[in-house]
Length: 314
Image (cartoon, rainbow, N blue to C red; front, side):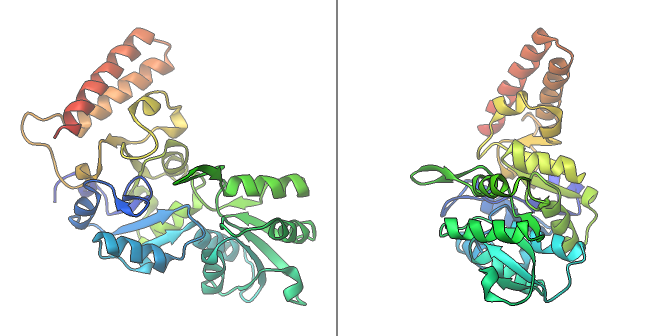
């Protein structure tokens, strides 16, 4: 096998903006992923969907995928609770869509929706997004946290893109609870925090530094990979483009950048620009930016733009 993925033992791939946009596959994504001879796990901050539902969506697009190939931020939150020593069978308040309760139950916890559902103490709160989350659900979370429950947020994405525009995401709902209880969550499971990537690497039975993380967002996918000690590939098919990358701070700079997922599995033909050339140009732009050399940055950035245009036309 040639291409970037050949340098790693496995791939951890984001979904929205990388594999699909809503119900539709991103161009070149399905064929590129299906052609890899490395295992792939799909890691998503989406806490509301169950892994089986995500796997079914991927299967509809043409990928051979099972629920075991999907890692959600709800699963990472449940893993964090177990790693922190929360006893199996403990009552955990599940705030969010069905994926939250399913992840907790699969990990051996008793998922409840109201503290009044049990006479036992609520040991923890896992707060994730769900379209049906209400003010009463947020109040239940606040009551349990104030009573001493451990609070884990699945993610803190402030916004949620929808077909009608931008809606408040889980981060906005977490902020409402934080305002009530006077502090932030004890832990956050999803990107840009490391747990989701670390759980994906454990699922693959591969050390994190031997995994390539693929994503389209600098502030979640790439920063999370940097914090987890994982090399990363930014594909320019989703949220962040080349201009955002050229302006990115060190904590949000990927190891590689490519126009799309084709570069995971194939090398360019003779005479075509290589991934390394684009990475080098972006790296020179970053070095010049860090050193205050605006002329050097402009020159390297323009070269990166030209290379990207040629690679996109491939």
